[in-house]
Length: 113
Image (cartoon, rainbow, N blue to C red; front, side):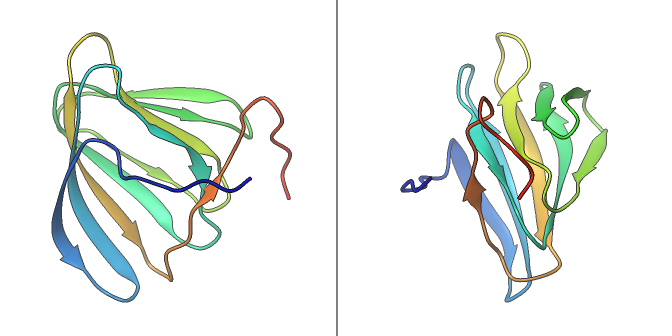
């Protein structure tokens, strides 16, 4: 599956290096970071405002982060991030350590590679 990836929501880069990135992300109600996975890096989200919903596959799971909570998504685990409910959310997204890669996923046809 190939797609042109446009970063969802407002992105404020805090730090960006060869093997780690830190972004402050703001998603409006109804916005999402679409289904994808990474081969090497871990995505760690820290909720700053609102509530962040992280949906995962392998196994299916839904995590809701309140302000002050965090969750790490390990490599090769498909995920999608949205605001929870009818409010937007703001969170810190720490990606690393390793070379960034992003692989789109169709959750209806996903099979572990």
